[in-house]
Length: 317
Image 1 (cartoon, rainbow, N blue to C red):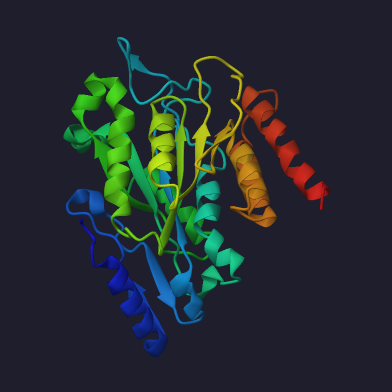
Image 2 (image 1 turned 135 degrees about the vertical axis):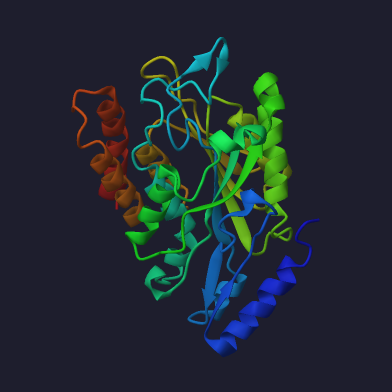
């Protein structure tokens, strides 16, 4: 077990924090380059009961989840995914805001301001990208992706939030595509050893329907329902306007399918994972991201469908 002493060390530091008023907690370090962002969260003595609150860490895939693969293939092998609605490398509207809102949800529910020097858990990444190709595919701190995460946090006064540990796949999964789901689940098991008790961290997994993320997410819920709060799967397709599967429960935990991150936020709000205010911040971020896109685009049509769901929630209050 990689982090067998983590629970004791965290609670010890919280007690010290109560006396010292402010201390930083380094909660997760995987050896090697994958361990960037070991500062996952920090404590303040503003509320000692934070010590018994589970923090929410978002776990994410990359291609077709954070940004589009463009549906590019070499022969019959997809280079990361199948989405053709967005150009390769385009970030999905509202994605960073959605993950930020999930990350700060335990802070917001307790009325603890992120302006007080507190940083929520950074986003962990489980990717099928081969570790052997990391020289070309590594997610670096100066990448557009990492900068977009950081900017989202900084816009709300959180300077320590962003891209956290990255756990890669291998060439084997590129050759035998059916192994991708298993590899991501195995990497998830490595990740949760940061807190094997489940008393400090809970998780929300965000993936897509293109590269066996559903298999990985559903296995997480079957094996670890006590710490995985939900699985969100971005519905991607090579065809326009794909049908959205119905959400379902596994071990009492939801598996949610969505087309836009506004749709994900609407369902997250209904599930009590984020507030209505958080949901509307995702709406605003997604709309802003599409400002330069024609309103006749199917991107806007998908967004309109889900924005209407957000306003239905507001109108029902």
